[in-house]
Image (tube, rainbow, N blue to C red; front, side, top):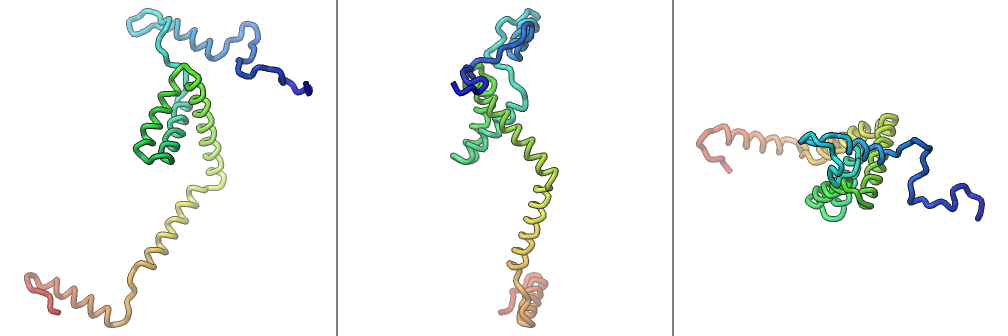
Length: 169
């Protein structure tokens, strides 16, 4: 033993609560047992759905969608996002992992929002893309090279102004 606090602790078990203190899971289960169902009777076993937040659900869906997009494209991205969101609702180790992943992705999103508010990254990126696209547009637009190009444009314009007549070559 090297003397680090909690070194011999089993980290897979929930932390010990003070007497009279309930965990979120215990509070949820108690609320579900007391809540009436659609027919008015209390629910002792409502469903197999675990308690989750919209934040966890959205974070897991984003993570699943991005992973699916990277692996196999947009079709699998939609399926993976739905599967990850469904996994969040299950009472299993998979659900626990999906909820933790959803929290992590949501926290990352919050952090990115703060960074963007500070540094205006989205705004700067948009301006840079606009500038770059305008540069490409200028390079792709044909330049007028003297009278020859102007004469061709006038001839083309005149030939289309004469309704029903064929252009002269």
